[in-house]
Image (tube, rainbow, N blue to C red; front, side, top):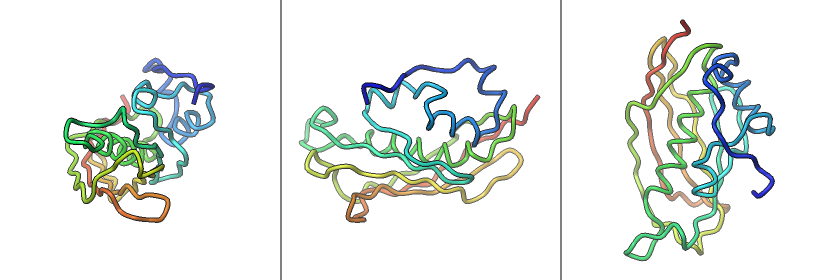
Length: 157
């Protein structure tokens, strides 16, 4: 991940692209990856209309005091995947924000889990509300967490 550039694009740049084009630009390296991806060590791997896939590897640096990966690692991966699934549906000039996310952690992540993949899929896209669902699975397809989100969409001005 050392050859990846991290940063935040100006809002004007974001608004000049529809959601899918912008996310493809992130994937292709035309735009910098968000700093949270560097902090937690995850990447955007795939994006298409209504779907986004991220991956990351739980590490000791993600542990909480009780000896497993902090739930925030899984929640952040899912928030990214579900939010970006909604983001792919945005038209030029539209923006969004997460209103709520519901995450179920069904088994613990540890440094022995290996790489996990968080996939988000759009459920509904309305004029001002988008919903998405997704899950985190390991390379064998074992489920670690699943989630749903509701996002508020702000129409272009």
